[in-house]
Image (cartoon, rainbow, N blue to C red; front, side):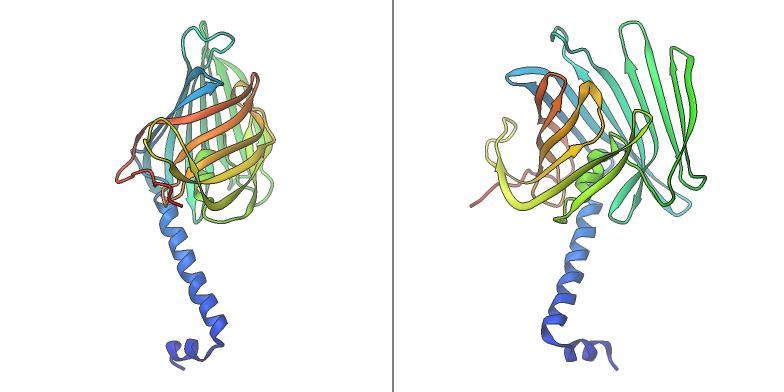
Length: 274
Protein backbone atom coordinates (compact mmCIF):
# COMPACT_ATOMS: atom_id res chain seq x y z
CA UNK A 1 0.00 0.00 0.00
CA UNK A 2 1.22 3.52 -0.73
CA UNK A 3 2.65 5.04 2.49
CA UNK A 4 0.68 8.25 2.11
CA UNK A 5 -2.58 6.34 1.56
CA UNK A 6 -1.83 4.17 4.59
CA UNK A 7 -1.42 7.25 6.79
CA UNK A 8 -4.64 8.81 5.54
CA UNK A 9 -6.57 5.62 6.32
CA UNK A 10 -5.38 5.62 9.90
CA UNK A 11 -7.71 6.91 12.58
CA UNK A 12 -7.44 10.68 12.38
CA UNK A 13 -6.31 11.36 16.01
CA UNK A 14 -3.52 8.78 15.70
CA UNK A 15 -2.43 10.29 12.39
CA UNK A 16 -2.28 13.75 13.94
CA UNK A 17 -0.34 12.41 16.95
CA UNK A 18 2.31 10.78 14.78
CA UNK A 19 2.72 13.80 12.51
CA UNK A 20 2.85 16.14 15.50
CA UNK A 21 5.43 13.97 17.25
CA UNK A 22 7.56 13.89 14.10
CA UNK A 23 7.67 17.65 13.77
CA UNK A 24 8.26 18.14 17.51
CA UNK A 25 11.16 15.69 17.39
CA UNK A 26 12.59 17.38 14.30
CA UNK A 27 12.32 20.82 15.90
CA UNK A 28 14.04 19.61 19.07
CA UNK A 29 16.94 18.07 17.15
CA UNK A 30 17.31 21.22 15.07
CA UNK A 31 17.31 23.36 18.20
CA UNK A 32 19.73 21.12 20.08
CA UNK A 33 22.24 21.41 17.27
CA UNK A 34 22.25 25.17 17.88
CA UNK A 35 23.26 24.84 21.53
CA UNK A 36 26.86 23.89 20.77
CA UNK A 37 28.44 26.52 18.55
CA UNK A 38 32.20 26.86 18.33
CA UNK A 39 33.07 30.42 19.24
CA UNK A 40 30.23 30.94 21.71
CA UNK A 41 31.41 32.98 24.70
CA UNK A 42 29.18 33.68 27.70
CA UNK A 43 30.39 35.84 30.59
CA UNK A 44 28.60 36.07 33.93
CA UNK A 45 29.10 38.30 36.94
CA UNK A 46 28.63 36.67 40.33
CA UNK A 47 26.80 38.55 43.09
CA UNK A 48 26.26 37.98 46.78
CA UNK A 49 23.43 40.37 47.45
CA UNK A 50 24.76 43.64 46.01
CA UNK A 51 28.41 42.60 46.38
CA UNK A 52 30.18 41.62 43.16
CA UNK A 53 32.32 38.55 43.85
CA UNK A 54 33.84 37.75 40.45
CA UNK A 55 33.29 36.47 36.93
CA UNK A 56 32.65 33.15 35.20
CA UNK A 57 33.47 32.77 31.48
CA UNK A 58 32.21 29.87 29.35
CA UNK A 59 33.59 29.21 25.85
CA UNK A 60 33.01 26.50 23.23
CA UNK A 61 36.48 26.24 21.70
CA UNK A 62 36.54 23.41 19.14
CA UNK A 63 34.75 20.50 17.50
CA UNK A 64 36.02 17.41 15.70
CA UNK A 65 34.93 13.97 14.54
CA UNK A 66 36.72 10.77 15.53
CA UNK A 67 35.57 7.18 14.86
CA UNK A 68 32.30 8.60 13.45
CA UNK A 69 31.59 10.36 16.76
CA UNK A 70 31.31 14.11 17.17
CA UNK A 71 33.15 15.86 19.98
CA UNK A 72 33.16 19.40 21.37
CA UNK A 73 35.60 21.08 23.72
CA UNK A 74 34.70 23.84 26.16
CA UNK A 75 36.50 25.93 28.76
CA UNK A 76 35.27 27.73 31.88
CA UNK A 77 37.25 30.30 33.83
CA UNK A 78 36.24 31.25 37.36
CA UNK A 79 38.01 34.12 39.07
CA UNK A 80 37.09 36.25 42.06
CA UNK A 81 37.73 39.98 42.10
CA UNK A 82 40.72 41.36 43.96
CA UNK A 83 40.01 42.56 47.47
CA UNK A 84 36.78 40.62 48.02
CA UNK A 85 36.90 39.33 51.62
CA UNK A 86 36.66 35.57 52.30
CA UNK A 87 36.64 34.75 48.56
CA UNK A 88 39.73 33.81 46.60
CA UNK A 89 39.01 31.71 43.52
CA UNK A 90 41.02 31.17 40.36
CA UNK A 91 40.10 28.07 38.31
CA UNK A 92 40.21 26.91 34.72
CA UNK A 93 38.10 23.92 33.74
CA UNK A 94 38.11 22.16 30.38
CA UNK A 95 35.92 19.38 29.07
CA UNK A 96 35.78 17.15 26.01
CA UNK A 97 32.18 16.12 25.28
CA UNK A 98 30.78 13.47 22.97
CA UNK A 99 27.51 14.54 21.33
CA UNK A 100 25.15 11.56 21.34
CA UNK A 101 21.71 12.38 19.91
CA UNK A 102 19.95 14.48 22.54
CA UNK A 103 22.65 14.57 25.20
CA UNK A 104 26.37 14.89 25.68
CA UNK A 105 28.77 12.79 27.73
CA UNK A 106 32.15 13.67 29.19
CA UNK A 107 35.16 11.88 27.75
CA UNK A 108 37.88 14.00 29.37
CA UNK A 109 37.90 16.64 32.08
CA UNK A 110 40.71 18.94 33.19
CA UNK A 111 40.82 21.20 36.23
CA UNK A 112 43.51 23.72 37.18
CA UNK A 113 43.40 25.64 40.47
CA UNK A 114 45.73 28.59 40.90
CA UNK A 115 46.68 29.53 44.44
CA UNK A 116 49.16 32.14 45.63
CA UNK A 117 52.01 29.65 45.95
CA UNK A 118 50.86 26.53 44.08
CA UNK A 119 49.05 25.15 41.04
CA UNK A 120 46.98 21.95 41.22
CA UNK A 121 45.96 19.99 38.13
CA UNK A 122 43.37 17.22 37.97
CA UNK A 123 42.61 15.01 34.95
CA UNK A 124 39.72 12.55 34.52
CA UNK A 125 39.94 10.31 31.46
CA UNK A 126 36.65 8.45 30.86
CA UNK A 127 37.33 5.13 29.13
CA UNK A 128 33.80 3.85 28.55
CA UNK A 129 35.00 0.95 26.38
CA UNK A 130 37.36 -0.26 29.08
CA UNK A 131 34.85 0.57 31.81
CA UNK A 132 37.02 2.81 33.97
CA UNK A 133 37.93 6.40 34.78
CA UNK A 134 41.62 7.20 34.99
CA UNK A 135 42.37 9.87 37.61
CA UNK A 136 45.51 11.91 38.03
CA UNK A 137 46.11 14.76 40.46
CA UNK A 138 49.33 16.74 40.86
CA UNK A 139 50.46 19.93 42.56
CA UNK A 140 53.49 21.81 41.28
CA UNK A 141 54.60 18.74 39.35
CA UNK A 142 54.30 16.35 42.30
CA UNK A 143 51.88 13.46 41.78
CA UNK A 144 49.37 13.29 44.65
CA UNK A 145 46.96 10.74 43.21
CA UNK A 146 46.88 8.16 40.42
CA UNK A 147 43.92 5.81 40.49
CA UNK A 148 41.17 4.09 38.52
CA UNK A 149 37.44 3.99 39.18
CA UNK A 150 35.17 1.38 37.63
CA UNK A 151 32.33 2.69 35.46
CA UNK A 152 29.08 0.72 35.93
CA UNK A 153 27.85 -0.91 32.74
CA UNK A 154 26.10 1.45 30.29
CA UNK A 155 26.65 4.46 32.56
CA UNK A 156 27.76 7.78 31.05
CA UNK A 157 28.89 10.77 33.09
CA UNK A 158 28.83 14.54 33.18
CA UNK A 159 31.45 16.71 34.82
CA UNK A 160 30.86 20.08 36.48
CA UNK A 161 31.38 21.97 33.21
CA UNK A 162 29.64 19.70 30.70
CA UNK A 163 26.49 19.97 32.86
CA UNK A 164 26.21 23.59 31.70
CA UNK A 165 25.76 22.42 28.11
CA UNK A 166 23.91 19.16 28.75
CA UNK A 167 21.13 20.90 30.68
CA UNK A 168 20.67 23.31 27.77
CA UNK A 169 20.47 20.35 25.37
CA UNK A 170 17.77 18.69 27.46
CA UNK A 171 15.68 21.82 28.02
CA UNK A 172 13.27 21.18 25.15
CA UNK A 173 11.33 18.49 27.04
CA UNK A 174 9.34 18.90 30.22
CA UNK A 175 10.87 15.90 32.01
CA UNK A 176 12.56 15.07 35.29
CA UNK A 177 16.25 14.27 34.88
CA UNK A 178 18.63 12.42 37.20
CA UNK A 179 22.08 12.88 35.67
CA UNK A 180 25.18 10.90 36.73
CA UNK A 181 28.07 13.20 37.59
CA UNK A 182 31.69 12.37 38.35
CA UNK A 183 33.21 15.09 40.51
CA UNK A 184 35.69 15.26 43.38
CA UNK A 185 36.84 11.76 42.40
CA UNK A 186 33.36 10.47 43.29
CA UNK A 187 30.21 9.21 41.61
CA UNK A 188 27.40 11.67 42.26
CA UNK A 189 24.31 13.14 40.57
CA UNK A 190 22.31 16.23 39.75
CA UNK A 191 18.53 16.28 39.42
CA UNK A 192 16.60 18.90 37.48
CA UNK A 193 13.42 19.60 35.56
CA UNK A 194 12.11 22.39 33.33
CA UNK A 195 9.08 24.62 33.23
CA UNK A 196 8.65 25.29 29.52
CA UNK A 197 5.95 27.95 29.95
CA UNK A 198 7.57 31.24 28.88
CA UNK A 199 8.44 33.51 31.80
CA UNK A 200 10.26 36.84 32.02
CA UNK A 201 13.52 37.97 33.61
CA UNK A 202 15.10 41.41 33.86
CA UNK A 203 18.87 42.01 33.83
CA UNK A 204 21.02 45.08 33.22
CA UNK A 205 22.40 43.78 29.92
CA UNK A 206 19.08 44.22 28.09
CA UNK A 207 16.69 47.17 28.13
CA UNK A 208 13.63 44.91 27.95
CA UNK A 209 12.27 41.85 29.73
CA UNK A 210 13.77 38.65 28.33
CA UNK A 211 11.57 35.62 27.62
CA UNK A 212 12.94 32.61 29.49
CA UNK A 213 12.19 29.05 30.56
CA UNK A 214 13.11 27.88 34.05
CA UNK A 215 15.24 24.97 35.22
CA UNK A 216 15.18 23.99 38.88
CA UNK A 217 17.07 21.21 40.54
CA UNK A 218 19.39 19.93 43.21
CA UNK A 219 23.08 18.97 43.14
CA UNK A 220 24.12 15.93 45.15
CA UNK A 221 27.76 17.00 45.13
CA UNK A 222 29.80 19.88 46.52
CA UNK A 223 31.49 21.94 43.84
CA UNK A 224 33.59 25.10 43.67
CA UNK A 225 33.22 27.36 46.71
CA UNK A 226 30.85 24.88 48.33
CA UNK A 227 28.24 24.91 45.57
CA UNK A 228 25.63 22.30 46.47
CA UNK A 229 21.94 21.67 47.00
CA UNK A 230 19.09 23.48 45.29
CA UNK A 231 19.54 25.79 42.33
CA UNK A 232 17.47 27.59 39.70
CA UNK A 233 18.35 29.09 36.33
CA UNK A 234 16.59 30.90 33.50
CA UNK A 235 17.38 30.05 29.87
CA UNK A 236 16.40 32.12 26.86
CA UNK A 237 13.07 30.86 25.50
CA UNK A 238 14.42 30.21 22.01
CA UNK A 239 16.40 27.55 20.19
CA UNK A 240 19.72 28.73 21.65
CA UNK A 241 18.80 28.32 25.33
CA UNK A 242 21.33 30.89 26.53
CA UNK A 243 21.43 30.99 30.36
CA UNK A 244 20.42 34.51 31.38
CA UNK A 245 20.46 34.33 35.16
CA UNK A 246 20.92 31.69 37.88
CA UNK A 247 20.93 31.24 41.66
CA UNK A 248 23.09 28.74 43.55
CA UNK A 249 23.78 27.84 47.16
CA UNK A 250 27.45 28.17 48.18
CA UNK A 251 29.47 28.47 51.40
CA UNK A 252 28.37 32.03 52.17
CA UNK A 253 24.73 31.54 51.17
CA UNK A 254 22.89 32.14 47.91
CA UNK A 255 24.74 33.75 44.98
CA UNK A 256 23.43 35.02 41.65
CA UNK A 257 25.04 34.70 38.23
CA UNK A 258 23.94 37.24 35.62
CA UNK A 259 24.87 37.44 31.94
CA UNK A 260 26.95 40.56 31.26
CA UNK A 261 28.70 39.76 27.96
CA UNK A 262 28.23 37.32 25.12
CA UNK A 263 29.51 36.36 21.71
CA UNK A 264 27.06 34.32 19.70
CA UNK A 265 26.25 34.38 15.97
CA UNK A 266 22.80 35.67 15.03
CA UNK A 267 21.51 35.67 18.61
CA UNK A 268 19.27 38.34 20.03
CA UNK A 269 17.73 37.77 23.44
CA UNK A 270 14.02 37.02 22.92
CA UNK A 271 11.68 39.75 24.13
CA UNK A 272 8.94 38.69 26.55
CA UNK A 273 5.43 39.53 25.35
CA UNK A 274 2.17 38.91 27.19
